[in-house]
Length: 128
Image (cartoon, rainbow, N blue to C red; front, side, top):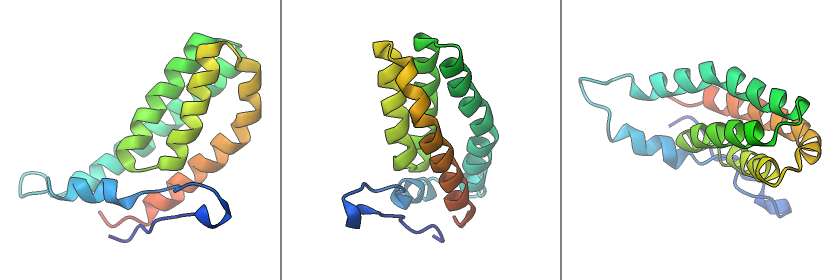
């Protein structure tokens, strides 16, 4: 696999990407689905802008339930790709939506944008 673990734990951070998640899908690849990994990555990347926009729209609209729902959806998608850092940000946003602290979520948007960019870059290195 071409994707490498991006691990910033040296400064006390957390694992950002876990290629073992995508490696697990490789066991499912056979003659009937030779492009499974590429198809999963493509679908994720195609859905990503809409999911990101739903989060930002919820934050701008001060809509806690919509933020919780949008963050939960992106969290699930990110988990299927091994994008652990994105999962963690989405968990925070989901919690803020649930608690009604949507105003605090505005401060999370730069981190969300950065992690989405890193996720796109990392998925671009994965050998399908």
